[in-house]
Length: 128
Length: 128
Figure 1 (spheres, rainbow over the protein chains, first blue to last red):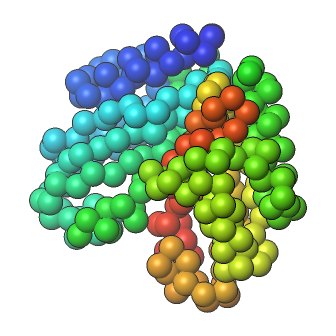
Figure 2: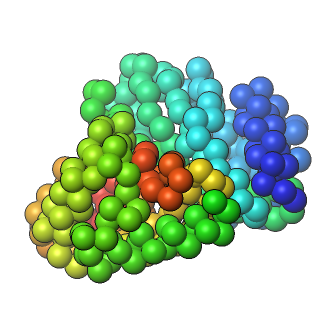
């Protein structure tokens, strides 16, 4: 898989999230996927995303920076959204906030098998 | 510059930081470097690092994941270190903590000109 192909596949994955197209998620995510060293598996990963959208109805993933070197992709994702309740253990409660996520993915062939993510909690704190 | 060359250059940059070899920093860092959208310039960048080592005498940069696609490098850096006072606005005060930094670099030729960094503040909070 080339860097270009993996980058395109990644953008398709992000589009899938933004459509909340959970039936398609298995095209991009491995059955044994881990997220920050927790084994979620495909079903657990889907549930994490469903829970994210329940907590943040206007959630939308925007790729700001994208770096692709198979089998790795790194992305800086930008968010402007309105969490209903607490978010990152902070009392956001319906404020609209902007923050970034810096996330690394390891792919096994054409599926994401390992995710390491950091959300910019300090940026959210500065907006409260 | 190939992905391999940029990755090697990046590892040389990290070795330079770990030696605290501030006379060499200009080999890797652009005179007009920005850090999280603040224009620091080479001197401001050097001062930031000098201040980091003053606050964290046992600071050491370890590359955990490295993704190189010119003109970008993304790195997951791992730290185990002992900040003397407050760190990320948290009362660390001499505890040894472990956390990651997810950091993106844009290079102009062979020098870093733009840095976007997120530190895992939530991980530090969990250790206090």
